[in-house]
Amino acid sequence: MENFYLRATPKTPEINFDVIKGVFEISGRSIPENSVEFYKPLLVWLDRYIQEPNSNTHLKIILEYFNTSSSKCLVEIFRRLEILHKEGRELQIDWYYEKEDEDILESGQDFREIMKLPIDIILINSET
Image (cartoon, rainbow, N blue to C red; front, side, top):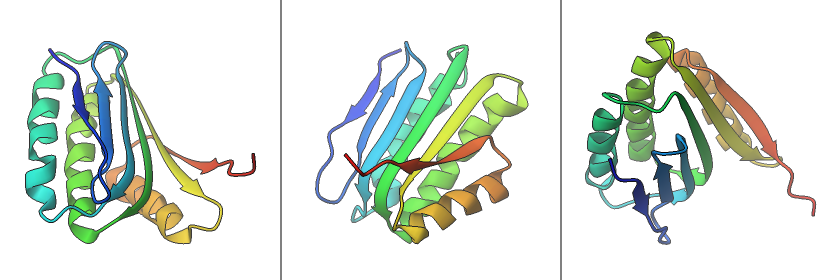
């Protein structure tokens, strides 16, 4: 199975899913014109991945902004990973937010509550 990678644009996030390492990352802004079409290839890829997953799967979400339709697509990603979690496989999800960004923080907390997944909410240390 090949890795899944999409380069970021001003309206779409970078998506880097490394099947060998089991480390998946979505970062940037997610405001595509058509979120369903944008995320569709990733969801198809995830459907294949969950058939033969890595022993550990680690998803990192580092979004600075996302729209409502992207939120629905994130739920679909989480639903697929929920299958692995229910099978007892190692799953770690890290949701990153910046100190001043209460919207992203609250979204991560909402996803954790709704999906009942092991989502860690992590403050990005922006002081460098």
